[in-house]
Amino acid sequence: MKAKTALPVGQEAIREKGWWKAYRFLILRRASQAVFLSLFLLGPWFGLWLVEGTLAGSRTLGVLPLTDPLVLLQGLVAGHWPELTALTGALIVLVAYALLGGRSYCSWVCPINPVTDAAHWLHDRLDLPKGWQPKRHTRLWLLGAVLATSALTGTIAWELVNPITMLHRGLVFGLGFAWALVALVFLFDLFVSRRGWCGHLCPVGAFYGLVGHKSLLRVTASKRAACDGCMDCFAVCPENHVISPALRGKGAETPLILSPDCTNCGRCIDVCSVDVFAFTHRFDPRIEATPEPSPDAPDEMAA
Image (cartoon, rainbow, N blue to C red):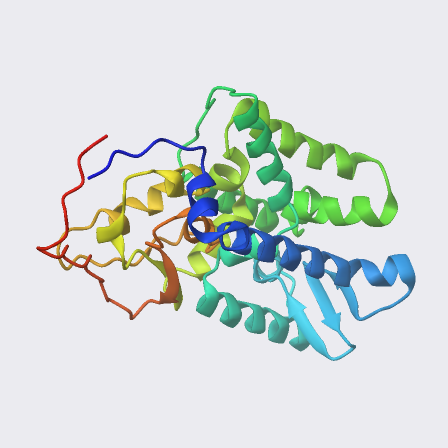
């Protein structure tokens, strides 16, 4: 095989597939996040109330209720029985993320994701050390602590400090504590723990990971035999431990990324120059073999 010259992450994909295909899912995610956030801001900014409320609870066009199931759960353990519309809204959201993958919320909806992605980008540019890395199950303990605090105080405790809610408040009401909390998340990921907030601490991400444990939408490494070992997928994945079982599986071992930690962000699909990865469903076990070279083809000498 011809030796390959190492290129910066994603550059080989741009060269082989073009700029759009090397960034399409990243661009679509940013567009999705912007659309969701804009829908909530049209009312307070311009008086166009297509959606009333926040990501914690809203009503679209005065008809469709949507409720964050984690907010509803906190209310239940706090001893507050919700109205039927809140229950209906939570059920709609639960079904959607159970099908799409719970942590799709983290990469396609959550407005804090661009903040932590920006911190990671700057972290790499400054070549800072990896920093403190809490155990990944820490966020599950924090989720438990949130529910326990709600039960003990009779409040929806997490909403008092939730950076997602704080970002929304900051955009509506201006500078203040809300923006300070968002800035702390950015600085935490930049200087203390690389990808620390979303990857290790956020209880919202932990909750949606549990919701999407058996979700239908999955990423597959069905063409893993074509992998050239460039490691770009590991470099861009916010939860890169989910890749190895699918990419490096042997024989008939599933090529599906089944970990609930996967955010379905699609960046592994973007940056892979040989198109190892693709979106599919959890019942797709196909593994595509690399075509055998023709016996008449000339051998290539290593450079």
